[in-house]
Length: 199
Image 1 (cartoon, rainbow, N blue to C red):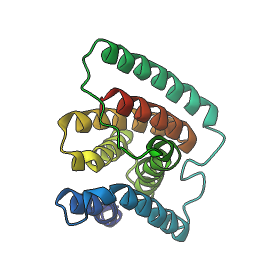
Image 2 (cartoon, rainbow, N blue to C red):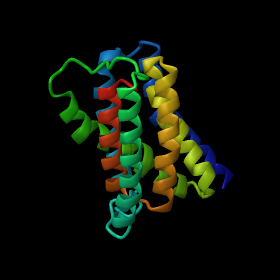
Image 3 (cartoon, helix red, strand yellow):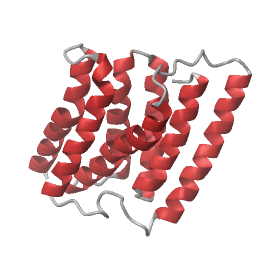
Image 4 (tube, rainbow, N blue to C red):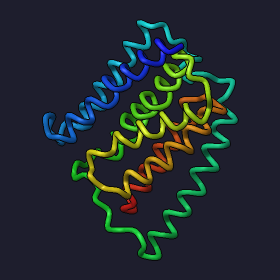
């Protein structure tokens, strides 16, 4: 058990934290952040194949789809309404959407799925493999690591929001492991939060 946990944390440090730290301290240029995200997802997909994580292990399944969509759908409706209310009331800063025209398409179809594959699918599969099965610990490790991805923006609001969402998505994923449900919610809430200026 202890040996598995040590291997798990070494894996997370190298595969999850090191690339982010290298961007944060400008060893890797900030402009390459999305390239690194895609590279991380591809490498972790290859890794998952090599260690024989099954589709079920990675949340690529149908048995939890309906319940996951219900929970993630309800969550998305609630937070979209909340963000819209804050935006209309002028309580959110001005949006800073990246200037490239296809950003939202990239975010919905590449960035959100990549983030969910990395921080929910592979993370929870690896936690199970390391025999770290306590739900609160799984959720905490996943949420903190997901939030740390956003440290490169040097913005405490972004860190706080992503930590909160990491906890909520982690809770839903832990109960109803499904890549599709959490990815759709991430895409919706991410687009709205960027468009309204929340993050």
